[in-house]
Amino acid sequence: MAHLLITGGAGFIGSHTCLTLLEAGHSLVVIDNFEGSSPEPLHQVAALAGLGPLEQLATGLWGTPDEPRQLLLLQGDIRSSSDLERAFNSSSTAAVEAVLHFAGLKAVAESIAEPLRYWDTNVAGSRCLLQAMATQGCRTLVFSSSATLYGLPDSVPIAESAPVRPINPYGHTKAAVEQMLADLAANQEGWRMARLRYFNPVGAHPSGCLGEAPFGQPSNLFPLINLVAQGQKPCLKIYGLDWPTADGTGVRDYIHVMDLAEGHRAAVQRLMNDPPQLLTLNLGTGKGHSVLELVRVFEKVTGRPVAWEGVERRPGDSACSIADPSLAQEVLGWATSHSLEDMCRDGWRWQVSHPHGY
Ligand code: UD1
Image (cartoon, rainbow, N blue to C red; front, side, top):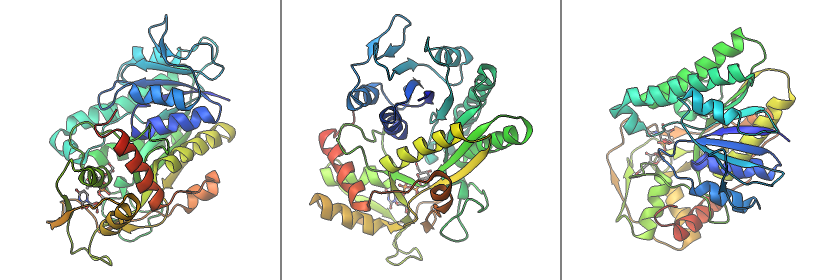
């Protein structure tokens, strides 16, 4: 079992993956600046993993002392080489074997308003992390990439060989980091890396103790459906009823966050066991669902009505985005196991117990 560094481990996907990795027996050190999150999910992760409570340690970190599986937490920034050095040297007994890199900004509209901030955090931050990894002699990395790279796809399902054509600054930053990893893989020996391209992650841990807690106004469909169902928002605005899809609304490949977490576990273990390589893998279900289908399944599962109205299309949206996940299935021996009903049920359980986030 390995000692792993998790950047952005307090975020939505990072926190669920931390739990899956701890349950698989790994020890973790998390670095997070809490810009879009809080330490609370990691307290929940420790409890769900059956570890003792996170306590402040003499080193200034938080952690679970006296546990064979450690969870350590450092408030720090991936753009700071000294913060990264502390993270790499956080355990007195084990060196970091691999890094799972979730830290980054992810709101498309914000990236259009503040492109330099996105290049700084997502690209300069990743470069700083890679430099620290090289210095520390750790060359195994799982990177959070995104299906946003495919822009407006020519056809679906989308294979990894489809052209990379991002259409906003957020997507450009993900493409730039993907290129940085490709340059390392092509020119330096020993790097083991996976670029995981997520489709649309939704849902929550089935306990209802971990979930998505966006800071500020959410812009993604699933959190908005939950807010409308709970009465925190009057009505869902559906961006376009005239798309070339079966019911006229946009189609996406929604994936349960626990399936995504399991994909990360499989990827990091594969990298640690195999010779150096660069993997590029779609993580999706291979099934598409329209906005109206998601609304109807959500209403059926939760028994709550979701009021909606059709409005203009959102600039930059595509009609349809569906993964071809066959390469990830083949390479990782991984497959999704949660249905759209599970995503709605688990997401709603989280929403009901945490109406205002953590
Ligand atoms: C969006 C981003 C994408 C990013 C992903 C994860 C855009 C154009 N794309 O993907 O780059 O990687 O989030 O953060 O922002 N919808 C509505 N009403 C709403 C919100 C969404 O009808 O209020 C529709 C959209 O038109 C789309 C579907 O719901 O058809 C899903 O939207 P969303 O959850 O925002 O995800 P993406 O647009 O796929």
